[in-house]
Image (tube, rainbow over all chains, first blue to last red; front, side, top):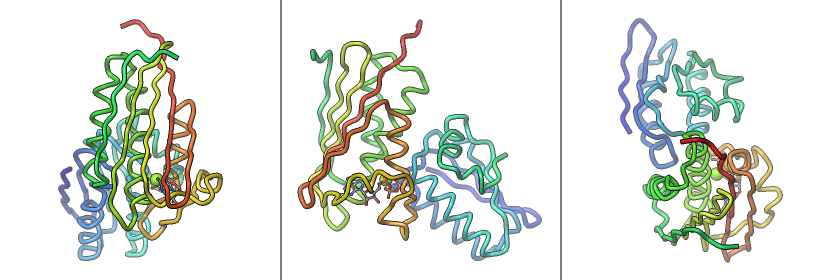
Length: 101
Length: 145
Ligand SMILES: Nc1ncnc2c1ncn2[C@@H]1O[C@H](COP(=O)(O)OP(=O)(O)OP(=O)(O)O)[C@@H](O)[C@H]1O
Ligand SMILES: [Mg+2]
């Protein structure tokens, strides 16, 4: 699991690569939260194009970040999930609360 | 019913074994020639069940997770995932969508719903302080290859 966060004019893009499960979600949560709390981005976009697997732990991760970013006055965006990952987002209902592009 | 092929393995309840279990199960099932989507469905269902053993079953302890995968006639996949952990007092309630006993850990109560929608059949048997056994079945489509 790899995470790379770049920031430009208030928009932060977190590029993820690998599989999201309960094991890898812990590290992602720590890294993303550290960034959001210190940088307070207007928009946090999480690039999902490199995610090859995600289960309900990923849904918990998205909802948790959605809440934190909102609390910090920003907005969360999900970018480019592969069709199968998008299906999990639809099934769980997160696509109704988080913008998926 | 006759079993065409079977694999049984046991892993300790370490979170790193969530991906181990997915990898072993999917490489075993490839011989049945599932579609990419069917393989993803099965991988996800296995991940949910194994994660539940680790996160809930062996919450304050460690133990073994037993996994059995069978390839049955008529292209049916049978999967059993068993722990000897704390068990579930009310299985019906636990299986309700969005029901979770661990919201503070960012669990959202979706695991059983995912298993149910990605597999054809799901059975959960549990006894408090004895453990939980999840069995799932999925019939693979017939397709040219
Ligand atoms: N193997 C198990 N041992 C003990 N309790 C379990 C087990 N599996 C599930 N449960 C109980 O059933 C509840 C619902 O499980 P489910 O997988 O649907 O949701 P979750 O694990 O809480 O959240 P999510 O799967 O979305 O991360 C759990 O919160 C837990 O109380
Ligand atoms: Mg679960």
